[in-house]
Amino acid sequence: MLNLQKPRKANYKKSDSVKELQQLALTHSRTRYPEFPEAARSTRNYSDKTANGLTKCIIDFLNFSSHQAERINCTGRYVDNTEVVTDCLDRKMIIGSGTWLPTSGQKGTADISATIWGRSVKIKIKMKDKQSPDQAKYQDQIQRAGGKYWLVRSFDEFLRLYNTMI
Image (cartoon, one colour):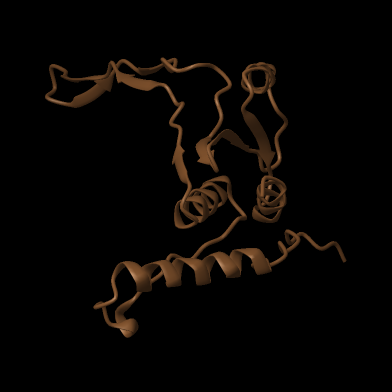
């Protein structure tokens, strides 16, 4: 008999480093808001299984650790050229289409810009895909200028790179 069911994906298991980040967030919340009741605290549920989740983990870890980090938005801008028209039978239709304009930023830019112990660090998040030629060119520019450029695929890998700067 032929099995037509899709194979089940393995359940995501949080790494110890992500669990430690969760504790760091709780400690940060306690010191920032000491009068706030413990029972009402809701800390972020961190995960590094998606690019967005990993980006948030890294940014929060750096900000909680007295460094500076911010997300770089490098998407373009959507221009909506659609229009609603009414035909002779009083039916409404949408005609036209939208287009994406390219970003005004540099092609290949990193996802996170950070300052760690006075050093400029650019962090590119990659889950499964490879680095594009524009991203490799950007990496070369950063490194020639004396900055650090990290290509990160997990929170554990980020912490390994972070600990080399200590």
